Image 1 (cartoon, rainbow, N blue to C red):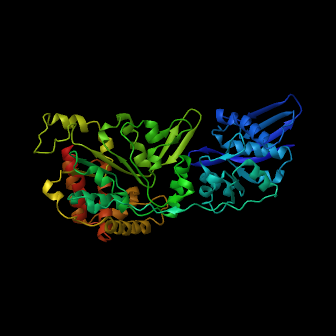
Image 2: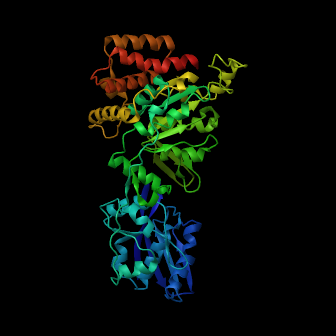
Image 3: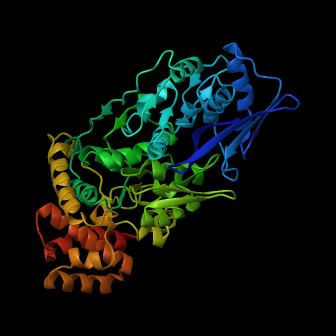
Length: 504
């Protein structure tokens, strides 16, 4: 008799169904796991044996073979412990074989039979729902998995509780979803004195998910401005929250099974490696660009990042996804994020400050900002110079709109875009529009077209830069409540690009 149950193997955010087969046959006593397991999966036999011994379940003196099918799919992680134990218990006729076959299980076993939480419960629940099976997972992972309402989620605390539930001796109630966290922003735009042009750029970038670069002297408020972006972004939609939470589930970032409606805001240090930013390492885990999916990736001290790391951002910025290629697998993660970068104008930081002249101008700035390649710089929709704030302005009362007021305008502009792209589910904001659709929604009036053509020829805009100006102009028109793109909106969009081009 061959007993079966199911679990999953992760490839990116996709959880592929894996059939766990157990056969007990005559021969010398042995316990082997086959089917391309990694070291953690191979060691499961010792954890399973100890957990069963703690429950006074003796293994027969026969040959036990566990096969993980499909055999050519790499199996990684400690979550295979529980399904292996269930398949073995079904083969020993301790639990009903039919019940085991209708179960997708994942969980790590302690030596005493306690179930240890594992990563990826949320995507595993989606796979269980698609295969019309229940999900068994550790108790601390149940609140996370229960967000997939189409699947019954049972979350026992130990292997003993699992057996008593499956045999009907002590049934467990299905797990309840965790709380929806609002994570209200505590930083307000009114805290920033002056910098009205930079605040306007933040509003435009947030409304259309445009990439933004801030260049200014040390202490001018670049990081302070960037830190207030989450307060003006609309909350995640239910579909976006689920997609983002699946990535965070694989990274172990979901706290107590709760799903947050706040958009991610990731700010890695400039010493981060390629694997940390793009993804990779052991198991090809998601990187910062994927953890920032549907949110913001803030890179402070932008030129200080490794040149190799910066260049790897070029393709994900355009495609909205990243493929981590390894010898034995190609793992794809979504990474549709808003990139915000901050940089000093030169190494000493005071190239643009007339009161503190840079001793090596202009070579200092050329060498420092020269670390950012032209193709990467061309991918920023808005580039803003952030001047230093006068000391007299620091004593003035708060000025400008609050984050709540700006957030309302951003939400209204995004609602317009949601209606505009309703027939194009792959598009979300103006930053995603391209080709014929971009021409339909962002073609300016005659005066605006003439201005854009003259400026493009004069400043040598690339084709990419030309289209990015159109997208920004379309977003400005949405904020203004205008159905068409007019000359003033084109002029403002150009101003956020040409001043930085001249400086660079």
